[in-house]
Structure formats: structure tokens, C-alpha cells
Amino acid sequence: MDNKELITLALKARENSYSPYSGCRVGAALLAESGRVYTGCNIENAAFGPTVCAERVAVFKAVSEGEKRFVKIAVAGGRNDLPDDYFYPCGVCRQVLSEFCADGFEIITAVSPEKYFTETLDDMLPHRFGPEKVK
Ligand code: THU
Image (tube, rainbow, N blue to C red):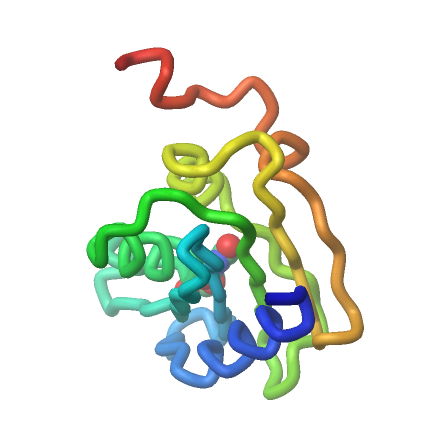
């Protein structure tokens, strides 16, 4: 699956964002090594603390379906109907991705299928505390 297709799925997932408090609508699409794609949107909560990011929803959906190896994730976010900002995964999501993804795992931050940046997990979370430290 190419980056444009994955971004399109992230933008579609973003439509389900439940974000009445921040107004930030975020979608994510995670490609597993199996070839399956798992999508997520951010889901907010009146108590704020239980809010979950789009990326973590996608990862937890995938892992709960038996997936543990991933290739790349596309993230699309913003406050308006069409994304006009680049939303990078928050620190907690980077750490969650770090549990399952190698240094070269690709993170695509997009505002459209044509406008995006790619970086690796290692770029975004250097010196990460990975599972090999405690296993
Ligand atoms: N959010 C995400 O879904 N992903 C990120 O990487 C950053 C933040 C969501 C959480 C919350 O619903 C809103 O954006 C504002 O932080």
C-alpha cells in the first residue's frame, strides 16, 4: 500500500473523530506487516483524562486482533473540516508505537494525500526505552 492510499484512509477515519472539547480532529491508519490496515480516530471524554489519541486507537485495535508487526502509520489532524496543520504523534503514542515498531518504522504526517512528511520512529523518539530493556 502506498502512502497516498494510507493517508486517504487516515482522512476517512478522521471523520469519526469525537472531539467536542479540543475541536482537534485526528485520524490514523496503521499498516500491519500482514497487509491489513487498522484505523483510529481520537475519542475525547468529559473527564479529559480518558481521552485517547487516534494513533493509540489504531494500535490497540490492531494488537487486539492479533497483529504485532507494523510497517507505517499515516496521521492526519487539524481543527478545521479539511486538515490544515501537521499533527505529529504525541509522546505517549510514540512510546506505544515503540513497543511494536522497529527504528525504521515510518510515520507519515499529512494534510492531504499530496502534502505530507515522513519520518522514522527513531527520528521522533531517539534513545527510546524499548521492550528489549525489560525482557
Ligand atoms: N491527538 C491525537 O489524536 N493524536 C496526536 O498525536 C495528538 C493529539 C488528539 C487528542 C485530543 O483529542 C486532541 O488531539 C487534542 O490534544
